Image 1 (cartoon, one colour):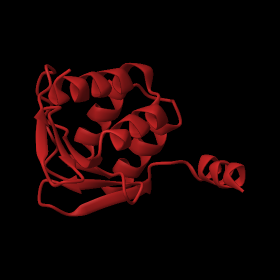
Image 2 (cartoon, rainbow, N blue to C red; image 1 turned 90 degrees about the vertical axis):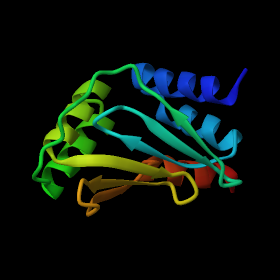
Image 3 (cartoon, rainbow, N blue to C red; image 1 turned 120 degrees about the vertical axis):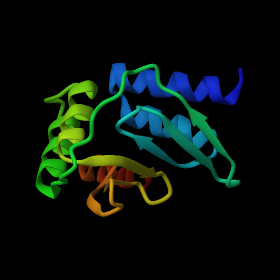
Image 4 (cartoon, helix red, strand yellow; image 1 turned 90 degrees about the horizontal axis):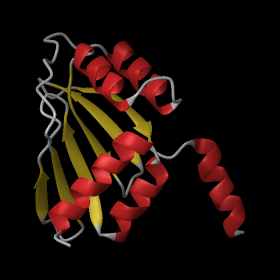
Length: 141
């Protein structure tokens, strides 16, 4: 299967099933270093460990990004989504309302960074919940 098609399939699956840890494992297994998600278009730029990149286009319609950005609203949108309170579509709409232009997921640092249109960092978070990280560490011992 072509790499781009496989990546598109991974992104579609995580949006529907919300199994983010499996999604991250598949990306890492395929040497993805980080990806950039563009909120307005739904397009993704995937960068591999060998510094190659692959563009994954979305079929979703455009979302208007608010001209004013809010660190508070960004944090709330992220927490609501990853606690299971909002769907992926609602998450994207809330981020657009908060002025988020893109987010970057760094698989090496296990971090997600939310950026405004004027390239200001609005919020960053660990992509692996602390409880799961601690459990994984205990299982390795």
